[in-house]
Image 1 (cartoon, rainbow, N blue to C red):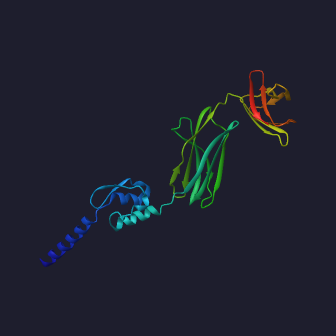
Image 2 (cartoon, rainbow, N blue to C red; image 1 turned 120 degrees about the vertical axis):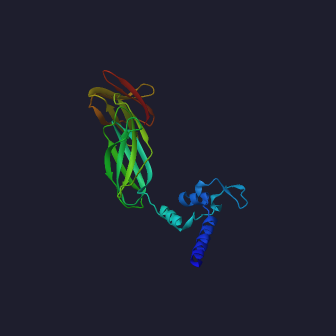
Length: 259
């Protein structure tokens, strides 16, 4: 009987301690998620107190030794990468997808995903990761087969243990049936670089005039292949606003640029 009473006494003290050690939900969330989760808490007299500076919020231990161990494990979790930026930009008849990381830990590879509706994504390539690094690393992929319309891109980073994270979604609009021209001018060395995307093979004329209509360059019967075409010309002119004109049998387009 004395043994039974002794055991009951121990259990009674244990449950009293458990009851006294109630979970502080705010402190528990602070332990898990960091300081920017609390908006209000409770003071000793149960009156709501607004928290305006998170450095004044004490970190709690949650509830019990096991929970503290669990929280510490969460604090030690390191994602495969820290993504610095992720961009996709149209370049003639392709899309340049670029991204960079500032930290990698046991990273395996990156998967570039593409979608036509922004919902269902498919992998179009896999790029190997550096693996372990605390430096800024740059990666790129050139999508040479974008679809007509809107192309949505997302980056998936995969760790060596199979865990992964996904990036934000970026969109690039594409009109593969339209001729597009990009003019890069450099008056210092008097050169004009012209990038022409043509949906079909054709012959065109390219000319440059000033704002008064004076022709400064006239290139006739320029052969354009389907896709991207790189042209370059010398132009002896003073720095000024100029107009480039590309014309063919079926279309004509004008482009302003500063020389």
